[in-house]
Length: 396
Image (cartoon, rainbow, N blue to C red; front, top):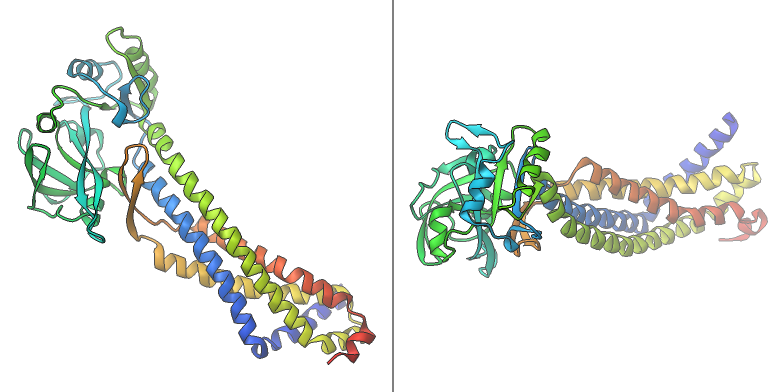
């Protein structure tokens, strides 16, 4: 066993010693693998960022109430009396100000993107005062909250950075009203940061919505209170509603978009991966060809085929791993935290999110690099091991 390992080490050293002489082809392999890893990690970090934005702050002790048969707030509709019944249902947490339930209205407004100047659909959400208790992650970064009854808006941090005209103090015309930006808020990187908030009572007449709402967000006494809350509402003959946990609601919204992004990422990675593998094959075949006589001499001296195979595979793996490390590092420092926006298909509005490069993504990227190195080095290694010694010694 010791002799076998020493043979592996000796042949591997011979291989690695000549990398400098083949630096052009070796560098091409490293760059090819790095490119695949960069694309893989970058694309999947988009899906991770979207998932994080939609689900990071969604909790199981918050319930979303929509009209029965609705999959999103855009398709839902509730009357004022309905929202009052929902707020008073058993299981809703109460504060000194009353039930922690916010009846909300959701409309889309056109706001130009800072990067391109083209109009984008941005959600304008009308909320009730309890919304700040239901979503306790909300923090005012600049300015103040809007005052009930006034044409004032509070802008999410991500929306303010992505879209023009949402700076503190600006005035904007939406619906039949002119609105003033009085504050910027954060929501722990969650979906609310992509939105603009205002008083629901002011938004209704601005868009001629009468006394209608689209959803109710209710903070429950505990996650265990959800079933009691749901049963009370679905059994009430005055209501025709759908009750779902906030975490489940936003997980369903994120599923379609993240699945599409990941599918595209896999296709692109596979196509680029095939190219990188051919690059590795070319490099390792060239490496074997340039060392044919050295390998044959070692075989003639008694070196077995196994150490030769492992030595070629080791070189291929090292080159691929180097490319994987470089690619993962570039993806992390180049993309992690980069903020952009995309269309949320569930609401047909812009969703602002940050690329999220996680350790798991980087680890999978490195695993892909190793796999490409294994495949790229396998056939050249077999060729080197099976090369007849007499023939190899006669080759240049």
